[in-house]
Length: 454
Image (cartoon, rainbow, N blue to C red; front, top):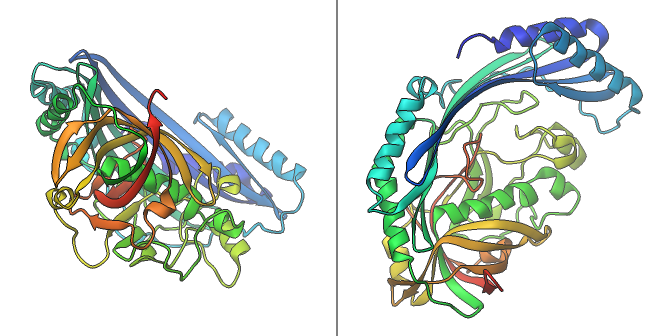
């Protein structure tokens, strides 16, 4: 990336603030390339380059923040002026924890950065698309390949300055056969990790197998959820369960030091792990680190930013999970892992073989929370649902609507198997910082309430 220097912009903002307030500024310079294809050919290549400058400050105990997406001097001066003015209008905030103290990053700043992905252009992405389309077995293919590089710089008037850069590659596509869609996706910090041919073959095979689905009556079924589906569960756990603000306000089902999930499960958040993506510090400049959340089913921690940590009391400290808008939304886990507690999990084929009568679910969508406290969520299946009988994957099943407590689905005694097929998955269907590194799960029950059309 050339042109804009995030460090110089941050220094310029702090200079404009001067002694008027304690200030912290985050500058993110992003270059995003997107190659889209439909009807099995590329129809769009776009590149978006942008800068986000976010300013937090505190004037006499009155905090305020603002953002600009321009980097010229007038825009930066306007950002500073309106943020200081906003602070002057606010009352004293008794829960304001102050700006974070200076701290060094944990791990290498470039752990999620790949030069080849940062330099990738339309031809590089088109090669991955061509490999996918080449394996479509005569079916119609559609989807996208995306590459992205983010340079992040955080600086405070107190003297801290930290930088982190990261790359992201994403491929998400379907093959279609007589109304049956087969999906395949991959996410990584390296475009070279994405095997378009393997993805195309997997999507085509799934679409062909999913043609002419049978109707299935509503009910509770044993299920094997593939990683893409499990990612949807973890996204809701991040927002509604592990969120420090939700815990403080008793809106989360979690209770520290209680065995609330199946003992075969452990969950943690770790931005320093090379298998993940994203920057190594949060929106408050706090370095991210390994944070255990669930250990053999026992809740051992939740995610905090500085504000939620102060409210929690008892010496609670930030875990480095401040996000944009966190003053109202809380603190989110953005680098989640879920795995088997005591081993590496079992092969996917073994999970399926242990199901006498149940369903294999490839993907969820249109999921909405009904009760945040118990994590009751409703949504639909898509891109492949298959009957499992006597340990064998059988015919396709028409898409179903479900209403299910995610907390109950992972409760003690409910997780019958954890896969060894963990991968970085993204329920949002687009490259973004974060994601979830999750395996397939074999669950004792999942409550389906009707068909997709009922």
